[in-house]
Amino acid sequence: MAPRGRLIVFEGGEGAGKTTQLRRLAAQLNDDRISHYVFREPGGTPLGDSIRDLLLHTDGHVEAAAEAALFIASRAQLVGAEVRPALERGKHVLLDRFLLSTYAYQIHGRGLPEEELRVANRLATRGLVPDLTVLLTMPPEMGLARAGARGAADRIERADVDFHQRVATAFAAFGTPEWQQTHPECGPIVAVDARGTVDEVGKRVSAAVYHALPELDRSTVTNA
Ligand code: T5A
Image 1 (tube, rainbow, N blue to C red):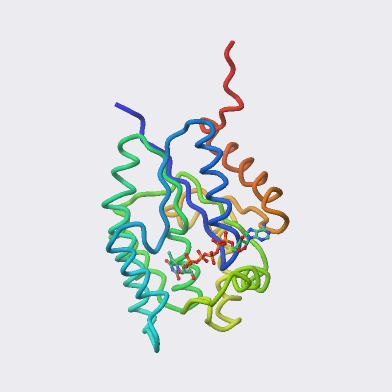
Image 2 (image 1 turned 135 degrees about the horizontal axis):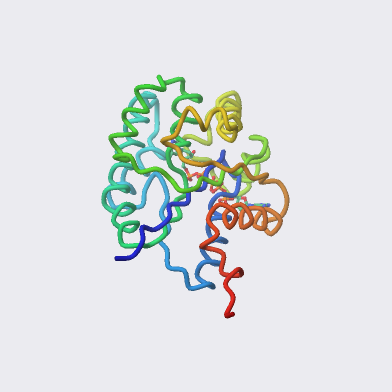
């Protein structure tokens, strides 16, 4: 039986470059013939894609609890239908956002109670813990400017700067050993400075991933 695959999550505030860096790592794994799947949250399944559309493009007021419940529903579907089966078949999974986004946006950004969302997350993940989370960090105004240069902002990007500042402060805390010790359900988190060119950041990301998961680093394989 194939050993269980590894779950590698990319996290960070708006426009931090998660998708760009996740694709870069996926291309490296392809070059090295390491088979893997790529998913994003919210989304990644037909149900999740419908939920994504509701979350990002609903007009008018959305209750914070309703927003949180929709993210959790998308997560439950993705983990149960795609991520866990892939890992059990021995495939690695690269995931664009996961638990930390709920902690940053719904708990610290919207002010929802942490313990209640931890319980809801447990329901969605059934105890699945990432093998590594790459947390891309940069000042929120820099990330929002990058995301904004790309086109019209979605419902969450349009939230005020104070909200995005709370989200950024929360993400910064998640990189500390103290936070990780008290939140074992999130697994190991490595913070990577997301400032600089795509290539500069990419080299930091590769170094962090290969340090934590050396079995993915084919440059260490010798023919001796
Ligand atoms: N959310 C999500 C919650 O509130 N709770 C949850 O539980 C979850 C799971 C998802 C939204 O949902 C929220 C968070 C989000 O608001 P999304 O569209 O998936 O929405 O949003 P993001 O994940 O934020 O995606 P973005 O595309 O905005 O940001 P990325 O992926 O961090 O950035 P990326 O790679 O797309 O890059 C953004 C732009 O910057 C350029 C890229 O080319 C692109 O144009 N760029 C760089 N430019 C210069 N230098 C670099 N190094 C660059 N890297 C990328």
